[in-house]
Image (cartoon, rainbow, N blue to C red):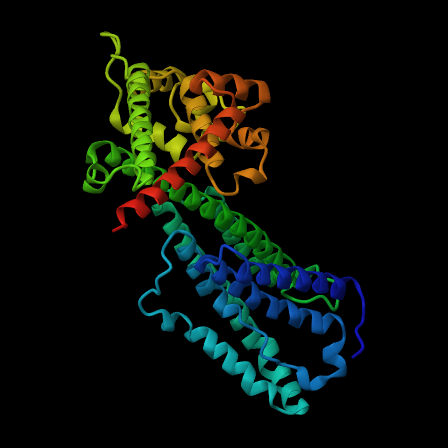
Length: 441
């Protein structure tokens, strides 16, 4: 099969390669989420349209006329696929009620081309000049734009209702709506300025693949971020479970097996007693640390002349740190934080002092330090250097990170990391011995 290589065919060929690799990556690699699968389907539907553009630009249609009106158009399915992707990304992977009705326009579009592709060339030519060129291609084009715009607007409303929705998604949807409006107007005006032979709907040919590929990259990155957050939450839950198990050992009292049977008969008893003593010591040290921390971080009473902190504003401030992760900005200042909250700087300072009992620097550095410590406990922590974790959390230099880490924990970062790993290993081994002992005869 001969292929004409020109600027248009090469561009579409590059788009096909990029799109196929992106769709395969989203569908086959971890994390294998519902959102990634819907995004891969959206890419595949778009690639079919790009493939049609390639067949035309490369002269393949002209040499193989039986391919005219091939069923490569799924544009009336772009909107429903985008809607399912956004729903899954925001945490709702369930099948919506009446989902099959959303696919009726797409089924009709596919059936339209399946009927036409089987016709002889003379029938196709007559249909093109009499019906498709003056009428049905405009119905198809503007129907696809209207469908995609309606679903994009629905997605924007859902993003606005979701507190932890990624901000980039709302911006991308706004950009898509602007592009769709421009594409709708341009198709009516471009005969006045386009050179002969240019496709009437060239703007969608050039712009829509770019927008979808940007969405693919951002969507994959968002899926990775959420997967990492899930791992951090799982590690934190496991750490809490182990701490509770260790605390239970200190209050459970000696078991009948330990008190009745001598250590010579059961050597594990000595190990169990040592483990309980270590757990009791650890619990005592943890209680002392918690008491000291509570004393240091206890909210200070506001001055008599100042009103108490507004709980709603305090909640907004906390959400800015815990949901928007503003502390990750290394250039964050009290003024930029105030601008983000749309409050005066002195009001934000009052919220920090009266609502959280901390200064601006202590609050920001506390969140940054907590993120580094959480990531150090994840299974893939060894893939990153301490400096990389510190910079990701918002620290702007290695010296600042080391100083604050030592001030807050009393240990250097590497020493804390080593002790945390050893503690986790000892706790795991201790739980295994205890389980073996308790399951014995």
